[in-house]
View (cartoon, rainbow, N blue to C red):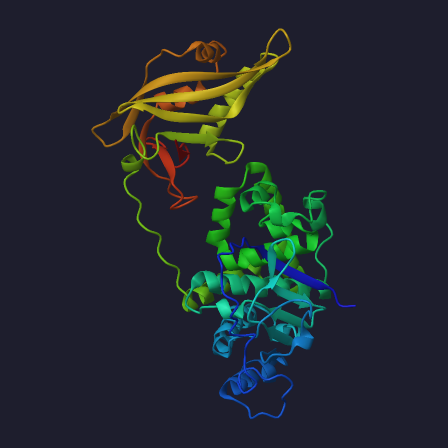
Length: 456
């Protein structure tokens, strides 16, 4: 029996009193674009293009005329808009077939490509609130839904379509030659059928590139393949830098390496080269929109501004070595006192136009065995220097909790801010446009820098 591998995405529906008119289900029999079971009609220009582009070179049938027998009879589905068919399949050819042809053995696509693409106008809605936008059956047929939503010049639409194609083709490759058994062990025990209720951010903090990857190891593997290809090196690295913790990033990195090894060892394909060619094809079809220029940092961060605080969180983000080492020294100093622990989260907050407060948190167990949470505060005056950099002058008046930290020699982060002059600007590398603020020490701007997340 053929097994269906279904790629879905969560969809929240707001019912706002729509009418019952359906231009696709209400098609008249005379409409020549939607004929069922008519194999004798003359070949159209679209048919000729499909035959010369897909059928003759690759033995792929592209079926777009409506045939409900190919689909679930218990679902309400609509035919594809014929005007969308060539746009969809042209993108499929240029981003999928052409790029594989450039990096793989000439016979690769002819051997492994599915033999039928079936196009459906609408999505296939599921009972859990998700919707199916693609399936692959037994390595033979790929069904592409939501064709009627497609816009060939919309980069996100093109990426969504091709994520589906790359995902389903990943299943076809795995059905032919399975991926390494080791992949299943990377996040074993945390797969769930309830993936549709899990936000993207939470999935990535658990070591999964998307929520749907949490359904099973098979879906996890092909979601890695599709995301790495469609986001490209830059987009993929941005996801890992901005949306994972050190622990979850290590899990995803291990999966990434297994994907790269699988393509090289099983098919002789350099995955990085394929990734680059896919990005070039996407850019040719639907160029990315340049990110808007951000205003100066101090237009939005400061006393009375949109954001008064910068947040630092070592449980979610990996910080540069110098800053990270300073925090570890403080963490270990606090841990020497039994029952005490420094939190991984702290803030730098404007208290007036020229002063900021470093807010650090730690917990301790009191004599009654109860856990107490303490806020340690340290004040700094912010003064711009003649060279344009900023200095933070420590005022040496911490509160009681802060004095305890100082007495226990947990002062290294305080020294980091007090002993450096900083170029303060938008973070330069990890997450452009993300709203991260970088603090770059003048004496070692790359190795010694840190960053904060704007907050209130």
